[in-house]
Length: 362
Image (cartoon, rainbow, N blue to C red; front, side, top):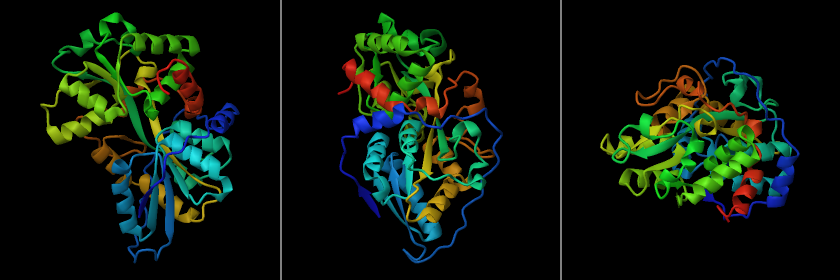
């Protein structure tokens, strides 16, 4: 069963205060992962195995097929409530101990960090965490990463025929006036805001402000999300756009190699090469905590991780899952990726405040 919550004006002051207090989501250097166990399957009549309430900051089109598979495999009655990650984090902060949610499944560490800082998560067992590298989970075991996404520049293959020569190595250099009227971005999108948060961490506030003002001076077209950015690149409406890597692969799988966009993984590293992780945590007040744990086990099982690799073209966080041939291995990207911990991506509110101050979002 699915429900969509009405939009909330996320509790701005509360969220800002909680994040400002700082969480304990910092991570330590990576450990080699091992394959997580598959969830035990026990098909049963609907409701016979109990229920599970998920607050999802990930989109319904992406997540619902996986929820349906889990429900069919376990007999657990799954209810998903969808909204943006910041919206659902705000709902959890407002509901507090009265929330009916069992599990929060977030698009990025910012929302997870806010809920973690409020003390709403319960620790996850080591048996569940052990298959995931430490850099992809909270140091206090309150949440765990589910899949990885890389920031890239999508470019039009007709306008840019030699990306290595024609595109900057560093995302900062898109402030050059030669990019005026050629760019697209999605400043209200959670992943874009996570990238800007990484900029604030790596570059500092002043340089990040300079980049945002420089890009805005180049008159970029704003889009609501990554998908229309990639569509606009392919159609020639814009020459390049700042997106997550996996959107292109969805279009290629549907439209083939004639699709007019490709990804450019910035070789200069830094925030433009950020690798982000989606993640999930179980609420302390979860009425169905055991079922929530089973769901995370399912997401981290070879079956669940294969779904992300082959259906959504995201990066698995466990070892031994084959990637599509067109997807660069994560190890190759990490050589130039910005090394920003989930804790350093938690100040979503600070980033939103900056974007509002500059008039980039409302």
